[in-house]
Length: 163
Image (cartoon, rainbow, N blue to C red):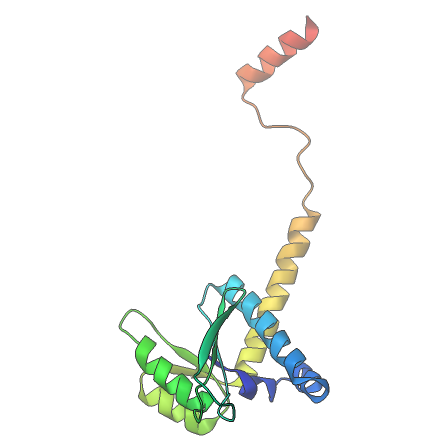
């Protein structure tokens, strides 16, 4: 689980985007987390505060992410605490990415693990390096010029060729 605005307020790239347009920063975070989820296989839920907006909270899909907008008068911290409590099971470990110290203590008490915004950024940067390395490795592989065949087939084709 990711505290969306907490991460936006902590990552340099997202801070710059936020200063120009908050929607762009939110979209970029969702792009990054979508790639993170695809590469790691972890299910990612992003929570955004909507406590100053009237109405019920909502969940929507962005690529394969779950994006949760809080209910009226609910903070992202409260939403994360509620969802962490619901999702934590013996078979399911919940990790919450936030640099909010109070929030870290609360979710830790519920049995969830915490990851700071900086730790998530460093992990993302390492994943990008790994992805780039794999792409470069794949692109430098030379395609095989021949189809691997057993010796009997090679002899048969050679006979046909000579006829």
